[in-house]
Length: 328
Ligand code: UDP
Image (cartoon, rainbow, N blue to C red; front, side, top):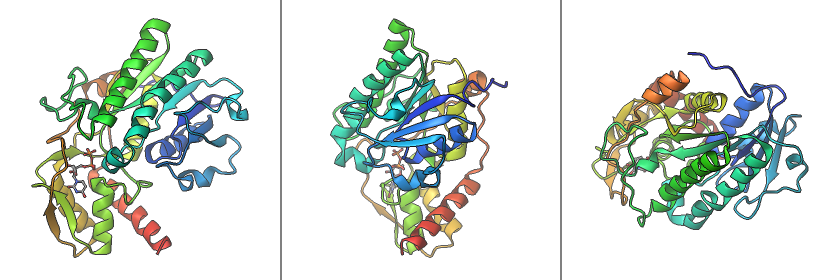
């Protein structure tokens, strides 16, 4: 299946959280298609460096604003209508769940409503970046979109999981009651260049530890699993959803499921490190296993992830090596 590219030359796209890890790669892809891109970010977890290469690009504007307060409607970049709005903003790492719980709740609720209203006013397509965390600690494996999940609303991760579930509900409400053109993507574990080395997630933590020759800290037994997707594959999936008329939710990720212990060993091997694996305490409500059912993504979007795990990890390790050297 091949979908027509609906958004390209001459289209104006707003990306919330545009200086973050995943959204900054989306911004690159949209610019490459010929779109005019406005990225809005408050730099709580996003970084200007992620979009620094676009600073002088004629079709790119970076607006600093906290969209949980209000959209920066008086900024010139917000004067003309947007053709598409991608709501990608949110702190999203386990460290953020404890250090920024209120910010996470607000960006996944108040800010979602602001952006939905703007999409409605503009007649824009609205893409909601949701998450595999919507399934919580799943009791169905792999996870199809029809599974309602197993979320602890009052647990530490609840702020993220429930904010994203609220965002999904809000998106569907605008679609059903106002006829808004929407697409919801449930993003599974994604990795690649521009992740923050200290964000507490497994891939950047393990790579940083291995490159420094420090012990690689596996939580619990390390038998818990994740399915890792390289950023380029995810970006392609999100753009396929953008170009489609699918409402979703649609899972996006890979079926390369591996245990966290295997991931630690693989990263030690690929970095050529002498680090050892150490087993430390497990975090609360940590999902035991996670793998997307990709049937919908394949049949509705023609999505297929193509980057092999070792290749994606090599590219990511290279990025960390470079940035660690630069900041040394
Ligand atoms: N993890 C780990 N050591 C670390 C960081 C993470 O063993 O230093 C584990 C974590 O407990 C979880 C898995 O790796 O079981 C994936 O964690 P990550 O934060 O990358 O993704 P998420 O839990 O959000 O899927």
